[in-house]
Image (spheres, rainbow, N blue to C red):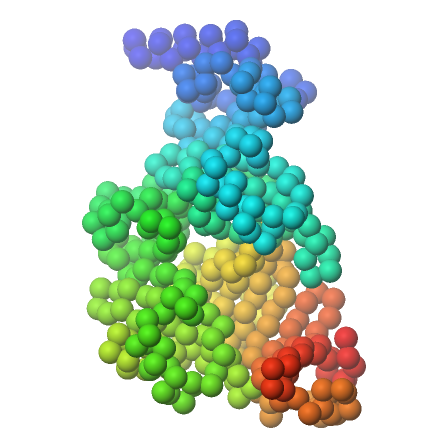
Length: 423
């Protein structure tokens, strides 16, 4: 009883301090007294408070005097609570000069240094690393583009999202709570690592960590047993012995599109996505140099992270590519890239930060090119070039063959539709 009276007293004080605003127009959602009390306890200087709901959370938008003066006026904070008063996340609108110096330096050294900075946010979340988000605008691929760059406090780029929704509020960036077993495993295997994000769905748990300056993704099954750790690498980071094994194989002349290092309870290996005019292939190379071709599973419910795919993306794929098998997905260069197996082909389906379909592409062999496309190439200024790689690309507005050509040190790229028209 005493505990209830104490909480009720704080809630009443909160109403006196804030006027108990619920929304811009004075109406709005009912907010639990525990959430209001938790806000008052965590941010006693908060003013101009307005509550809203987002999913299962109560979100308080408010101002703190020091930050409000530094930014631009208006509400500069958004704190997320559940009905029990548990805090999950606070988003704070800050100025670029308030960022840690390492984050400022990382942005200035990035490819987006010349872009206009539209917004800067600090995300504090329960139990995980604080992240700083720089929203920049500029031109990419001939069109206006917006990119959200997520940095750790020491300037490591941990995530990039292209063209997020204008009203995106980071609600899906609230991490799940890792079990004690998962947390203990992370700290034992990667001492000092910082947890960036935790997602849990359909019994699987994915944990993203920052191990020093290296981002890693860990996957755990329904029993909290470790399945694997994946680390994205540049080709230059692959051990020489592994690269030698690749060079000595029949795939030595293929172009490396992507490479990841996998650790599992049984083994460690490097997975290469390779491209050539003869077709793309995915191979694994073990530490002893043993090479194996990765063959897609063509039945069953899917593997890897497919079970954790966003509902909207899953619905789109089910409608556009019936009976497709979702193999895995990941963020790549700001886009959500979903790898599916459909009609005998591996296809990459890409979505932007707002969940909008951007494109789908898949490998095409030289022998599969329509005669009209071959004729178009033969009649172009690149007739003497060698075809290095071919992909078929679908977008909402068009479909075409993306053809990479080379001759000596010269390279060219053509976009040709199925009728042989150069785009």
